[in-house]
Length: 219
Ligand SMILES: N[C@@H](CCC(=O)N[C@@H](CS)C(=O)NCC(=O)O)C(=O)O
Image (cartoon, rainbow, N blue to C red; front, side, top):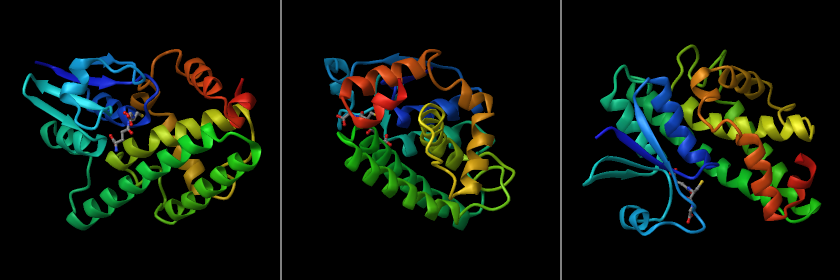
């Protein structure tokens, strides 16, 4: 059985695994589900009811994007994770930090009014300053080599790019290394091809439907 990735079409966590699979040129199929109305077969294999889920065989199922990505990385050489154990642990810590930032970004996207939006946005930008301090000469998180840390942050940064293009606020003005990193990530084929062709339209429609402050400025 080829890898089957179970996804929600706008999920940034699934996108991390899609980028890893595409970067490694590993064949896979993708099955989209409606998270509002998840099918029984999905609930039977996803103990937390979350995507991504990676299925390798009927009884071989993984969940959690960071775990899925490490498995894909270990079984499809050459590895994207750094070889040095300290550096690998460091990357894992920052990947986890990036997962929290995706949560913050979601809260920013659904914040009901301007006050709540500004608070969420500024908390996200404050957290990005910690990430800025981890970056060196670039172009990627660890330098020249594209890694799992890059796959982990690309969905967050591509959504920030979408928001900034449609509602300019200088989101990355205080974090120039992240701005350059984002540009390098968005130029990668594996990143560009990691979402459906009409992603931007779907993204805006979905968040407009959530009724938040920001979505009104994205249309
Ligand atoms: N820590 C998880 C987060 C995954 C996650 O939150 N996925 C969202 C969609 S983007 C989900 O499935 N939400 C459904 C739910 O929470 O019930 C990971 O990295 O895979």
